[in-house]
Length: 229
Image (cartoon, rainbow, N blue to C red; front, top):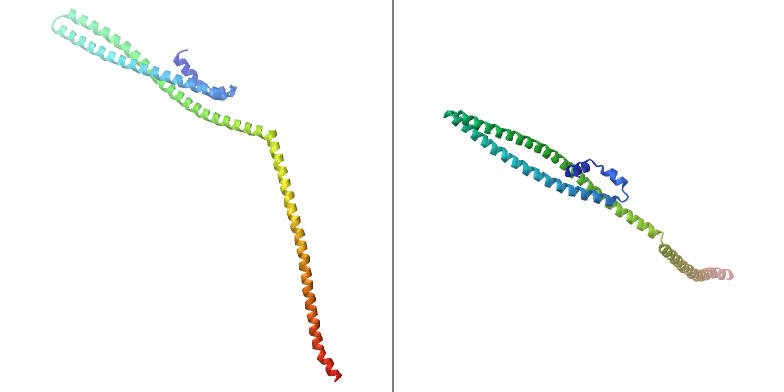
């Protein structure tokens, strides 16, 4: 397969379709990128050779044009000296050289067409290569994300995690029990304190009642004595 055929195939290829059909998109995109990079290197190397050939042909045209001019001057000289035979021979040489120039210029025109085509296809190939590289990054990120999700799901379904969760629930129940015991002990202690507070309050009320009775008795005693007198 020639480099031009490979280049055309790659430029006209549908990367999305290739990835959709691939069992391993990551591997496929890596192969596509490698093929594009290798083709791009070959095409640029071939383009450099075409440019060198073009320069060589241009130099040949310049050289032939100079030779044609020289033979024309010789023909003029021969005519001025009355040597038509030499003039004709010089014009024949000039004609042959002009024919070579015409052929060479046609070759140059073909090289220009090839260079134009190569330039356009290199731009398309570079654009496809950039797109492929961008897709490669996306595929790698998606692959890693998927692997992480699979790993997490696997661990979530693991008996070790279930066992650990059971232990957490067990310890939570133990803590709840301990907190309940502390709260019940605090309630019992508070109930006892309330009973003593009630006794002290009753004792104070009894004392206040006795004091009130004594006060009232003292207030009533002079009135009784006045009645007796």
